[in-house]
Length: 363
Image (cartoon, rainbow, N blue to C red; front, side, top):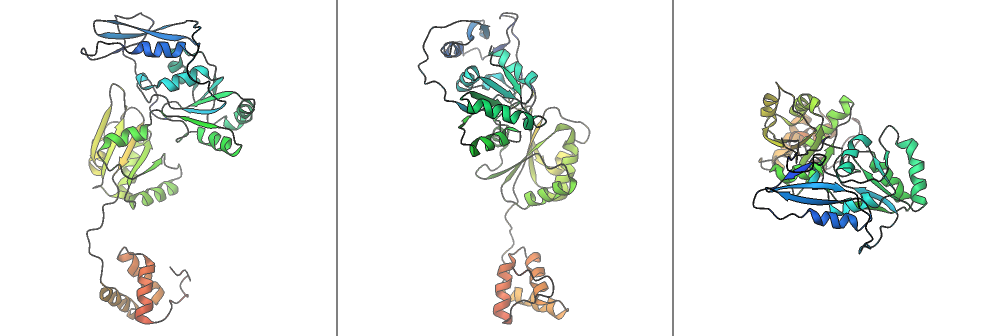
């Protein structure tokens, strides 16, 4: 889904074939044996860790364990498994268990997901499942599920079903009463929001904008008038064009946050106004998929107009030759008010319903 590429830190103190991860010196205790025991409990290739000079290596080995799992067997169904958005350490024990136990793993890009499975020595078969083949794969996947198999679905990174083909498969399974089980994990939009500094109590996730220019403009105008934090996904090569579009809809003074390469070595959170962002990114194209956040529309500081002011405006427009219906629309738009409120005032003050000769759409 987002941020295509896992980060690995190599270690000279570990086995040459094994990626390693470095921890602060004071954390000398190794917790990776927990993963080793956990994976061994599901009778799959497991992990073990060694420590040397405060560098902890995650070494992979194949083992056959006779230890009975203390956890209940997984029930058949579609498992939506969250995977790291960049840092392999962000995988959960539950996700590892499901990926080890599944009959098959559906993946957007099997080559990309193969890196994750190889890192944890997971041998479950991979099957490609993306927007270009989902209609062909759908029936085969449903057959597996109806037969009682465990099917795991992962995206390239993050939580499946969010801005990727997994949403349609999950919807279909729900319709057919096939269990859909979420396995929580990383999510680019929540990760970015939590560290953005923008309001988090309410937000609107837009995701990728439509391809059609008119539809993009309409969506941005809607977002520009919402009071909640707006969250978009933006390909890096389209950032400059996106900034021009948002500038047109939101203005240059709205605060924004550009989050990229999250959880990876070159993670960046750029903060400023849309105008400042246009200047900052006009000369270079950032790398890595972008989560773009915009502050919601600030509350109006203008006092609500009085009834006498509204009545005066209506009379003036009518004296200029406008119908009462048109005058109500113009006043409501100009004062940023609901047309229904101005309509009620017009009925009380002028004592007659609005004319329908304009377009007949009363509020």
